Length: 316
Image (cartoon, rainbow, N blue to C red; front, top):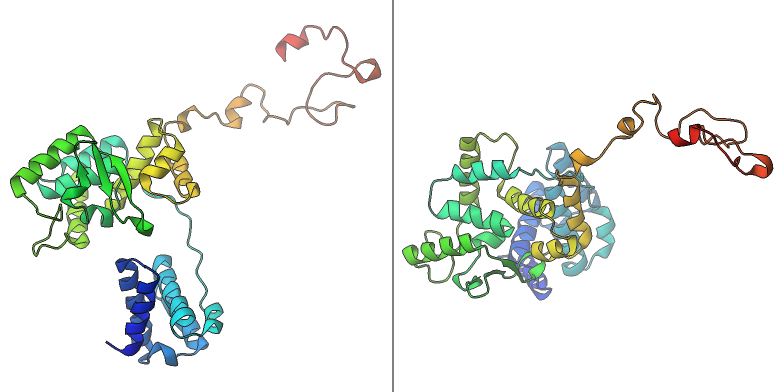
């Protein structure tokens, strides 16, 4: 390990960055160094600019683009003491697309397409408790609190802990799983006693999606989106959902309002509301003195409506 890499890791560790963040940042800086065949402390602002253009030209995702930007900005600001380099490494604007959400029937089809065993139970826990993939793979036996019917999520995103309700059916399945496999520490260990590989679980998920005949490009994280959206549709309030998902800001939770399907069929378009009149609301014929606000009622003397508007009032 080079002295620069060691110091980079130390500075990230001093700021209590998650292990996954440290791994991602180190890989991002190493990628830049390999591209130029030179250590990052010898690069120029123009080279950093060229590398960002290189990522765009290769069609890299904006998530990867911003990961590299975050790593480089941290390196030059906190490790190399070159804050003047930071403005030359801007973030990219990530498109604000809505996540894929499956209906309850599609989720059941998907889960039924997974052979009985560990993977099926893990997918059911992901959907039943709204877990991220990393939270799911790093569950420990001690995180299952049967007495309180609670699943404890330790060191989630941002290093936060939270508890989520554990359905009775899942608790029974987890107890049966533990009785059969007797995991000592990690609830879902891999072959060498470490947490199960995320890539292994993603491959199993994609195989199940194909068997279920689902066309949307769903991933394991889709189960978390389904959890949030289906809870909203069932009447869960937003502050409660924010706590269940472990979101720091309510604005992050608000995006699930756009995914609710229970209210959309009951919303009437202005075109429907104006049906029968042949006009859209507010576009009716104007009369002198009404200010162009539609047919309205012609003012009487002194600007007041007449005392008896006549039969037309009932139609209005």
